[in-house]
Length: 160
Image (cartoon, rainbow, N blue to C red; front, side, top):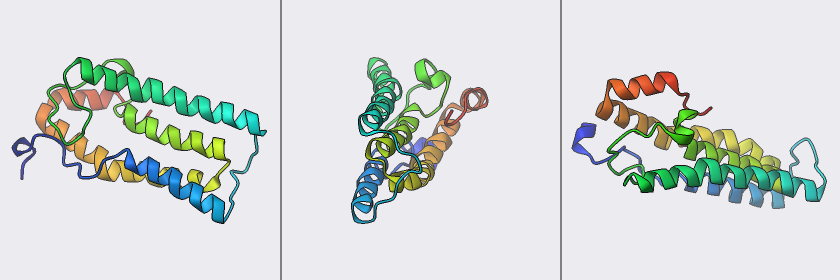
């Protein structure tokens, strides 16, 4: 089936579930078999540093793009139609700010919980986000928008 026959990208799994699972599974494994991260921040410090990473990424790479999509009448749900390519705001620096935010939340949780399991699973989470969502979205957008999306891909990196 061609992408033009569908209303959106062939994403079949809600992407935010992946980082949520990484944090929950990592926390569970850390409870059963503690694994440090190789460095220790004092307890109040790790909450501040990790919390800053989580909150900062959620505001700048999560909430900001969501607000941009809402204002332009687009949906953030990847399997719905994309009427235009968004290139403003954080999309000037990364083609996938919301997915980057998910990875940064995992890293922030790694610091907050001092949990090496979450750190070990974060690259797997990034790879799974690519496999289950990003590559499908890129293929859909390239077919739908052609040269304008290819030009955008050349000027803005996938992650950072």
